[in-house]
Length: 159
Image (cartoon, rainbow, N blue to C red; front, side, top):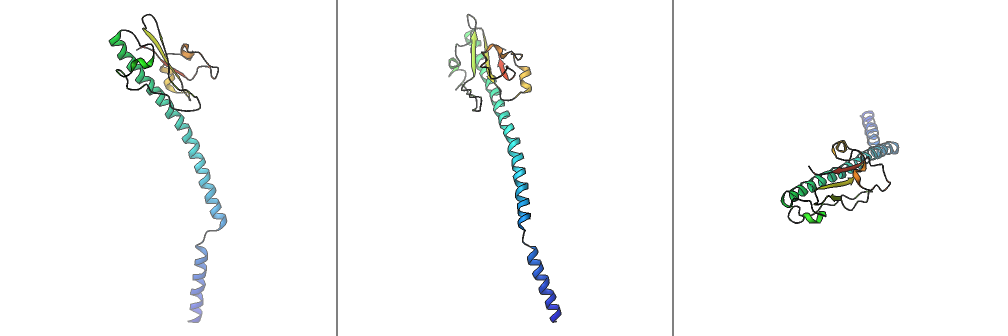
């Protein structure tokens, strides 16, 4: 039995040594996790800017609907977006914060009486929605601040 007990003891010693991770194995796992985290964060940052653009486009649609309701009743558009409150819109939405530093949506009514307008916002990304707006990449008549050539300006007018 003595030779059997020695063999069993050696197997137990070897198995307890095999259960621990080596420093190299731990560092490899940490490196893999860091790489995956970097990839995930990078892909999510693009998603956040696209989500902010989607909110901008949605907000302009809500403002446009409120302007049309106002026009139907008053036979002209209001001189400012604040003229929509509280009858046609509870609060005038503000653009989501980003590096674009836009604090409000641009609204430019024209005509006498006010029978035309342009709603404008600059998007962070090029979007397929830009093909459906009214500006045709011409900056939709809004003064360009020199930051881009108007290719991301999203503009709406009367329906």
